[in-house]
Image (cartoon, rainbow, N blue to C red; front, top):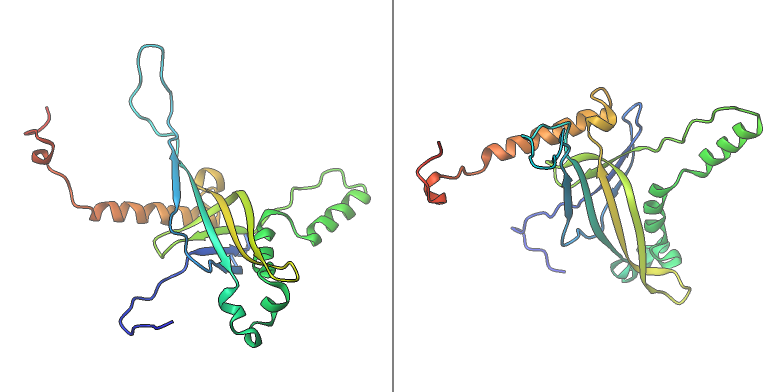
Length: 219
């Protein structure tokens, strides 16, 4: 592939896993190819509601609940062109990359064994297993804590040993706000930075005019 010297560097979207207590980075997962589209939905959190014959002014209870959906493609074609440099791909296809993403959907084997040991020892109350804090990164202006809500893999091609060599991974994410994490939590502070960045970007938008709306003013 020819690279032009003046072509812009294309950043990759991805996920970062951090320790919820120490904020230590545990793993960085970058997407092989950025998806062509990203779907975001905001569910408004308002107080009150619609009465039988009237509504009320908007009063917010908290930040909107934002959900993100995307499809990521993983393809071993480029690596298979250079088998001496990518032995893992030759032996396992894209299973290592899929395994990393699948690890987001369940606890580790060590956590499960620890829970089993606690149950066998007669521990009356076993705390749920906390996952690392997941951050969705889509440019420097979108670094936001999320929780995985939906996950599916479609394996589309295989090598002679039935290792998958091309797949599409669908991810559903829910943004975690200060309502979910609190202001003192590392994820809560990251959400506030995310929200403040949005406000700064909104301030840069070109304001509209009454003339564009075909009116002279309001009141």
